[in-house]
Image (cartoon, rainbow, N blue to C red; front, side, top):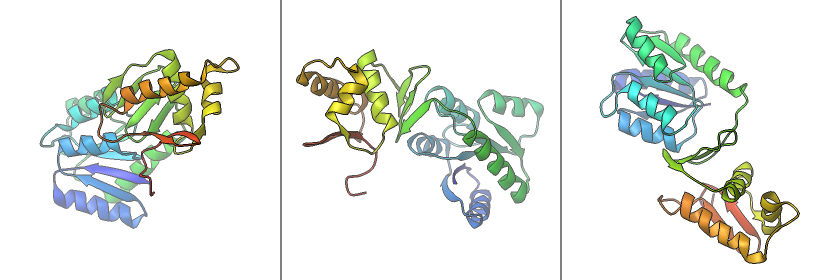
Amino acid sequence: MKVLIIEDNQDISASISDYLEGLGYTIDAAGDGVTGLHLAVTNDYDVVILDLGLPGIEGADLCRRLRQEAQQSVPVLMLTARDSLESKLEGFKSGADDYVVKPFSLKELAARVKVLSERISRMPTSRLLVGDLSLDVDTHEIYRAGKHINLNPTLFRLLMFLMQNPHRVIKREDLDYAVWQDDPPDSDALRTHISNLRQAIDKPFDKPLLRTVRGFGYKLTDKNADD
């Protein structure tokens, strides 16, 4: 399990990290809201442990951005010294899934983290993820690094098929069939649509995801060529 801890108190963050790592979890940590949001958007986590009182971006606002702008459904456990009902309601309203008040038991915290991760893993999802690119099959919403992307129906079908087969080389004929079924257009059409898709999902960003594998086809991946 991979957990992100966003907590500006280094002692608390280190205690949680040590305890969870002892259980076999992989831990990333951030000491401010800006770094935490960046990590949460650009990586895949099973649970985010989030302090409310953070420098840079306050915890509730970070959670709200994670839900509304980045369209991330990762479970969020709020961890804070604010024990008032108003603070708890603010946390849940911003999109938190659970709320733990300091001081707390590391054993209880770990149990809540485990329950959150298992609950989400049992839930059906319509969201596809490759790196920081997400596509919701039901709502047709597409985001990359928190930025909304608009695609026409043909490009949407093309991207959806690539995201359903991440990191794999997809043959041109398979892409043709996925988009146009038994009535594909001329051979240059796919090349044009691939180019238009690159303009939408790659050009505004630093790292390209859509790769051409010469002589074979295309693949969508956030892994480096030598991974």
